Length: 237
Image (cartoon, rainbow, N blue to C red; front, side, top):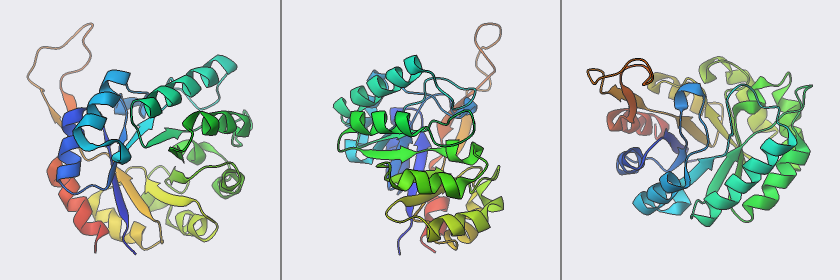
């Protein structure tokens, strides 16, 4: 079985670099430093133009700070999903929980409708639940095509047993491992039977550029093609 390699990117240059280095697909977002937020429509359009929409999965996450959303936020995500798909994205990445840590199935149903025929991915919100396997069972019947998970651990390498259990219980849902993955972790993660591996492959540039009050910390993330190549080699064994 070929394990797909997905790279999280934040700009068109990163999209081009990841695909040129051999990645199978992308998650497009902004603000990876806080776990990722919804990218702008202009960014979505640029990434789709750069590598083709079928490879682009757009994160629709309106804010940081957890995954319990109110009605306004659910509406906003639905609108972002529709806009992303209209801009050519082949998939969207979402996640919502109830206050008790179950999947918010009403929100998921709303977002499934908004996505139409696009791929619907449930992200690592599942790892913030007390029982990822129980939530996976909920998602199997909710129109979710793929789940991104670390197996409930901070890092995927520490969630191998749960990842393997999720693979065994996945039904038609693709299980994609992601969360703190380093290239040397990939063989053990692939050994659980997951269908895909997800990482950001980030480097930093601009550390000597002006920064300071109002401008954030020095430097910014870029996609490191050498890390993508190394990850691809590990997924292919």
